[in-house]
Length: 206
Image 1 (cartoon, one colour):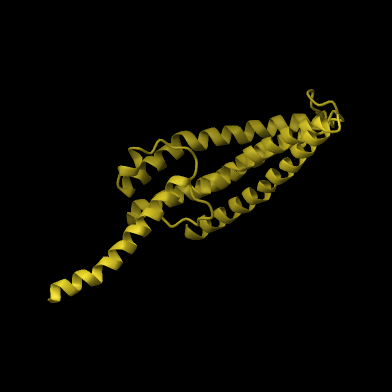
Image 2 (cartoon, one colour):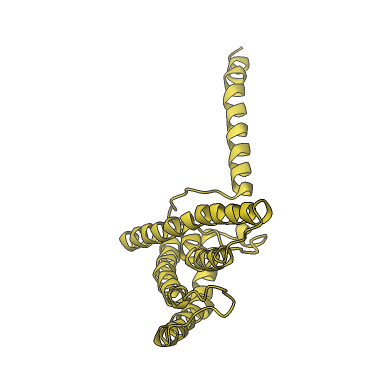
């Protein structure tokens, strides 16, 4: 199970970081559009399509990466107070009852949706350039497949936690601000305790 978890995490990270470059491309594209529109009075016909399609692709393909980092939105005010085994049992139930049925529906319905779009070479009705959008719709079943792969890894994490009482370690490359602040406070408190300890030891000897 650990080998599969590692494989799924690496795949999700690779997909997420590859599509993450879209942010840079969108930034340059939007900046260029603002410049030519308001300074040169010569707007482009492709800037809207660029941002529309790239943001959609980035949003949908980042799902598996976000799941691999346990970064999806969760109301964890109570959840964080539970023992790890209770957390794992709750997560496992929710994955089985809600996650997999929903993602399977997304994958199969998205496949038919994309297939129809490819069949008649669909173009955007909102684009002045009539750009093709069937490649974008192909990402719907692709994102569903990536979520299924990562979702199975999360199920394995739950099973391991139920057996051992400890969550398997996750690779971390980005931290939420709240988590970073908590880690900084824990480090500062430990550092103060380490500094105070020699003085306390000297007082006890005297």
